[in-house]
Length: 57
Image (cartoon, rainbow, N blue to C red; front, side, top):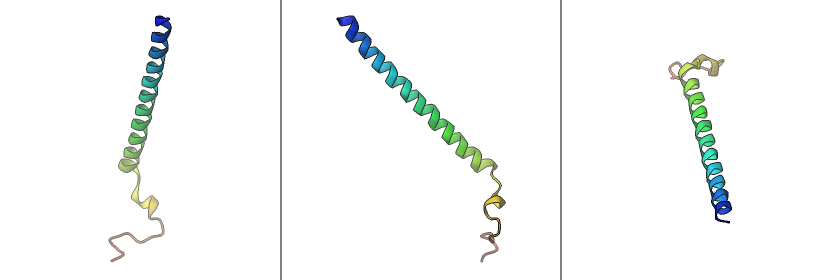
């Protein structure tokens, strides 16, 4: 009986830990994707056909 309760609690805790790790890795992946976009995206792609902020004055 005690072993069953321990195992049930252990498995639930392990599942929660793995879910947390999955969320952490997914969050890091999203962050790296955003940083890559910021670092390597060409600014002229988004302003095609629009005047830049410097020439709009």
